[in-house]
Picture (tube, rainbow, N blue to C red):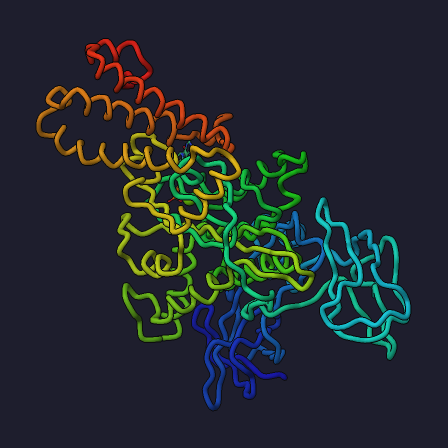
Length: 541
Ligand SMILES: Nc1ncnc2c1ncn2[C@@H]1O[C@H](COP(=O)(O)OP(=O)(O)OP(=O)(O)O)[C@@H](O)[C@H]1O
Ligand SMILES: [Mg+2]
């Protein structure tokens, strides 16, 4: 389907093609810039171009594909670094240098790379749609391949094979390859949704102990400028007990992405494998085109679903959703749509829910459980948590880790505010940790929260009467709370303390609470407060 460009306004281009559908992919101009149909009228079509439109002029050709924007799914995604359109960045760099220019289509997956394939069906077997016919070993992950059409196997390959060679030939000539294309805006079928019950262990004491999260849930990390969102997300990506991590750097600084890449290259997980081997990185830094930023989230979530459907635990991390929403706002303004609150389009919440709702635990075709968890950073301007993006995310999230500017200024990291954050999964997780880690977990959890709550109430009194004006017992409580904050909730991501196992977490809080109980007992036995505070571990820091 061919036409011509009739008007251009930044990345929004109108073409004279008719008969296209919403979200069909279109190629614009002699440079074949990739775009997507975003608005249809009787006699013209509006296209959002994902690439830089510099130099594009009226009358250049336009080609409609009558197919949506797709992502290529198959072995080779793990360890990959892609842009928002799933173009591999190393290949792009080879073609266009460090600053990406328009350089035509590049295959998303390396079709020439050879993969070890072990068939699980024989010649003559009858395949139904969704049956597994073999497995490719991708790093330390077994990558099952599912049949996309039914039929009797006439030939099946065994051993190393390239992605562009057929693995199976069915009677009638139909061939099955190791990769498939999937529309990014259409959720993958997954399977029956199941309840999310297993804790996601992040290694961050504040999260695992106070505000735990489960596999398959959604958490948001809103925080003002410089409060530690990126460091927290990257620590979670490094240490969480998960099979696959999909990290989307959405509109963030390029040097932070570069730092992440070099660090992941060197780091190894518990099994001794390089972290990059189980990670997919989608980089759409602040200087890359905004329309591709909007679609990058959907590209990434589709890849995450692909591994979830194999029965793996997948963690989707986005930094930051505010930049994604800004892209949405920019596109909406270019389309002259009626703006909603703060200029964001009125469909902000529904578009957000469109991908957040793709999280969850599913029972896959093989009966295994696969999960897709999401931890999303939000950077509200001026740390105003009542702004539309934070509020829209809040409605969909089950855990909320609010980063506090004053904590970050006093170098308390992670700067999670324990009074304003919450998790809806505390009950399930506490029961799990009490069963699997320490029977004392629920008691410790309750005591810790109680001390922190009493401390915040006493703080107001201290502001009026000073520490000395408090009763002895309250002074002990204040010093125990101080120790919880300093030795338990603070966790420097750049030291060996960056990861704390649930056992270590339980031991650490148990020791602090035991010291506090002992101090209270000594006070009751008549010892002087000054002696207790000076001698014991409860001395204020
Ligand atoms: N867990 C941590 N341990 C030690 N230092 C930290 C930690 N978290 C944050 N920091 C410090 O705070 C600085 C800012 O953190 P970070 O870049 O993650 O903030 P941000 O919220 O992502 O900022 P921006 O809004 O600019 O994206 C870091 O460079 C680091 O020095
Ligand atoms: Mg950041």
